[in-house]
Amino acid sequence: MKILLVSCNPVVAPYPVYPLGMAVVASALQQAGHDVRQYDMLAGGFSLEKLRETLAADPPGLIGISFRNLDNVNACNEAWYVDQLADLTAALRAASAAPILLGGPGFSVMPEQVLAAAGADYGIVGEGERLAVELADRLARGERPEQRIWRAGATLDAAGMAAPAYDEAILAFYQGAGGVTPLQSKRGCPHRCAYCTYPLLEGHRIRPRDPERVVDDVLALQARGAKQIFFTDSIFNDQAGHYRKLVATMRKRGVQIPWTGFFRPEMLSPEILEEMKATGLNAVELGSDATSDATLRGMGKDFNFAEVKAVHDRFLAAQLTVSHYFMMGGPEETRETVEEGIANVLQLKGAASFIFLGVRILPETPLAERALAEGLIGPETDLLHPVYYFSPALDRDGLHERLIAAFKAHRHVVYPPDAMDSGLAFLHRLGYTGMSIDLLLKRSDRRGTPPT
Image 1 (tube, rainbow, N blue to C red):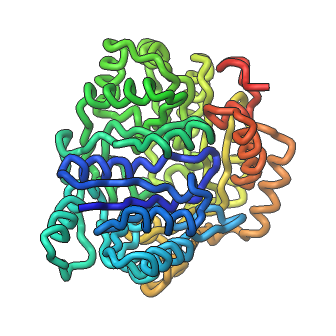
Image 2 (image 1 turned 45 degrees about the vertical axis):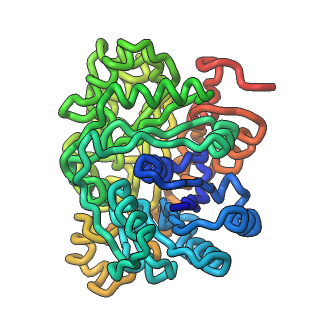
């Protein structure tokens, strides 16, 4: 069967992200014998006319849409993407009689609501490889399943996790628009952070891919001109130590390409850091999340801020680019913790800190349970539209003004979180590539000279 997969993610900050989920599902469908094309709306300038031309040139029997984000989780400047998805689905429906399938994390967190809002035929919740093939096979046989939402769970082992099939044209677009290419080495997260949907989508058990196959992907991307790899694992330095096996395999096979990932604030030995750097580690993104011990506990973290600072110092000493992401105004936040948090963030010199106001509430998370118990939301609250948790002890507008005043003179602290977006986008258009954090901190001398 001919299948067209479409990515509709419009987010370009801090850098445009290749649609990895679409590439993984494309690979599984191709291995099952289907004729698959990939189309990226961002690469196509979000032109519905170009998309219609693609449909007319080679009509598919199934159209899949990868939907990554419900919104931009920025309470200071909200952007909601479900309407855009609905417009895309309507345009596809008008141009093709093929069934339309939704997938991706933006769909999976609220499948019934998104399917209804978008007007698609089917949706897959969670891992799409196996069920996308099953649905495509049944449609190819002339069946039209009545079941609209298919739930995958988190069941795939290393053999079932398809290596991504990166499309050449789409890859070229992203290489020229920031140069950061995503890759996943494992799925699942054993932690229960208050706001996070990773365990809901990927399960609580960590399921690693075969390190050799991951390195195959790294080397293939490097051969195709990749400039920076981003491991999209929920946590790269997992406590079970799977990351050590991957790093050892990268070292054994001579991998040397700049790479980064999401790191848990946990002290790593100088030895493992040197191993990572020898393969190309040049930056770490820390899920620090909250700015004081009280608010870290409120967010479900099992570390304190002193540990965040110690890990920060260790990474800087290793000459790595470091970035932190903090949410202020969440559970247990008070006027006192706000002031403590501001002081703590300003200690983190030499790194970029992105500050978010409030915490987006998503269904079935501990934060949603807390908000319901506190009466901040009700059983019928529509969470499809952005709803944020703000501590009852604070005034939202007052907190916003306090954060602006506290951080406006500090270049390394970004508040609101999109304050640098237009500048970073401009630099990418000029040809700057790599980690946007480097551009923000003006540390290009460490990574090489940007183009002139």
